[in-house]
Image (tube, rainbow over all chains, first blue to last red; front, top):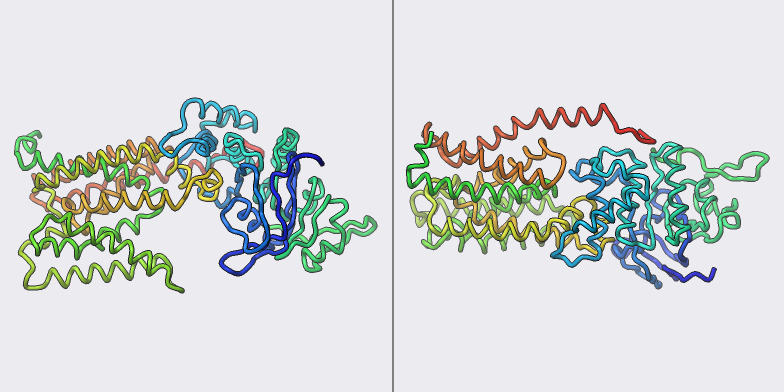
Length: 248
Length: 279
């Protein structure tokens, strides 16, 4: 635990206008750490990501971001009819270090090809982004963050809509990137996935708990996070969420 | 076939139309990709009172159009900020107010004859100032769109992601609208207040049907705009139809011709997904 803190939040409140959408958020994110933001829809997960990205200014508390952050948004919401290739999307990452009048050049496109190869998308580099499958699009956006040289990946429900093989491949990739020193913050409503992460921050309009999943995800915390709508699997002592919490 | 090229007035018209087509085709791609076609049409209509006042005062139309478009843009920004008023409503209120004001001025006794050319354009009679301003417009757009290409592309694709890259979506929006306003002010004199938007939307929309990348889309939009512009002028020359309207109809025809290609492509994409690990 001696790795440097890339992001530090102390009692942060953040929201839209003067009204906080989520309060009392405190965490430290270190290199190589995978942090899951777990909570119901509307609980404030995406709001926290937007604050880290600098899109929303904290209404209270102290939020320190000491590393470049790459955004990996939900691709269902992005413009799937936009006429760009996977390579062009990955190359956009180079814009973060170019002055405004410079266009990405040959070296930047080469770096983008390398990043696409790294995420297993090298062969589909010339394909139109909107024609890729959901998991492939997520990996292209991760490649864009790698070209950007982002140390922190901010992922908004990256597994939504993916089938099991795609999810497994994406999770393997995220784990490998964490092993290389990238920190990952992932908003999710998937309790089982959060259990496999290094740390979990439970949120429902306020921070409920934070810590390693095995110590944090007990019945009391989950009830506070999901408003009592949890089901215990008989004989296992493990709690799960009823299916209507998962969107499709 | 080359007869129109031998007429001096047609040579000037073709030169003016070609420059406006290059400007409209290239800039129009970003108008279409940023989904600001309505704003483009509205900006064009809102400069009508400025054009009429310039005609009444006998000064170059550019001098009337420029303050009018700045006023309209500021008014739209202010009205859209009022509680309970969205951007679309703000635009509609400002544009109808400005256009109505323009009609009142146009129908006043001080209004000079031939005021209808402000609405429908006078592409067959461009002045030297019109030709020079169109040439300057093409040069400015060529430089600006080349420099801004990467930023416009990244911001239009994913605004949140662009912010994470340190880009400013507000800057991209503002740059696009300023270029659009300048282009409309120049083009409105040739193509008219009601028809100018055709050259900023039609060729780009047609090119979108035919291409899958932005740079080829820009090349196709410029080619379509130039060809449709020439076709419109030819039609006007031989059939004696109104030149601006003929150009607008040729652009619409180009869009309709491109439509089956766009529809076939979207069907193909739906029926044959790429090999992947999910859908």
